[in-house]
Image (cartoon, rainbow, N blue to C red):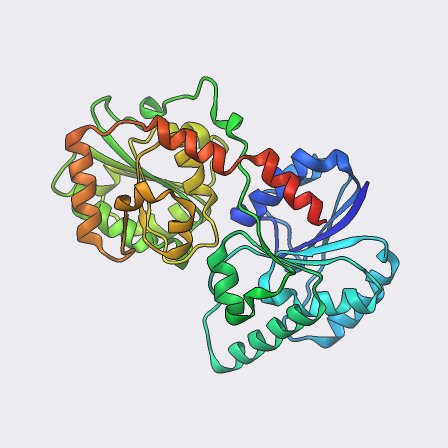
Length: 361
């Protein structure tokens, strides 16, 4: 039986938070103790779901990025958990945590990179700190994991020959998307012949909502048979004010929803023009349903999809290309792709990939 402390920033709904939640739901019986340590000092919308998992304890304690005293206190606390493993999901910012864990006598110290770029606004000072923390990761980690090869390449470059490094793709339980899924057209007042383009993901710069909205506005202002549905934390709050009353009839915005399989099932086409990603759970979920998709041609997404679907990938800022593809798809009445579904389920088999991650712990 394994005892592990997982370090995250918080428990709001996002790719990492959902990944860890699914992993713990699947593997919790093989842990004697699980601690989820929120370094940001806050929980989040998924906190209650985490609490439902047996053996899970949640600690919320702020650890500053450049506060040595915080890491000295962490070291003192970790001394009481020297027989645990630790896994920090915060990329280079895991560096000081790994140092604290090493000093506390913890033998297995894992960092799991979940992005393929820096998730902060770069400045001279921040990049200096980032570089230093990267060096701490290299010095004090026993395992360096990432969910994409490109992620490792971005953060470690020529150091990739390090035998501590390994890529473990995201695992998705495809059975969540089986069964009698609902079509939400009636709830959304969308006619049966309406063509629905959709997106799932919380509002942030990386998800490129600005391009999504620009494309949507240009399309619905000339074609009212095409609809857009978007959901995720901050989506309605930040985007609704940018739409006219007429546009709101065809561009429907929602905050977090607990019926994502049904939400995806309602779409004709999934639209995912992210500027940067680690490995996108949201896109994988859509592909598990066999949904035709348009996405950005960034390296981590190219690593996620099979080469035969590269024709569905475009520059994330090329609005005209996305508009053309969406309009063509609506005219051709594009259908779900059973081969896409089969290939995706095989590639992201949650049992194999969760077992692989557990072995590292």
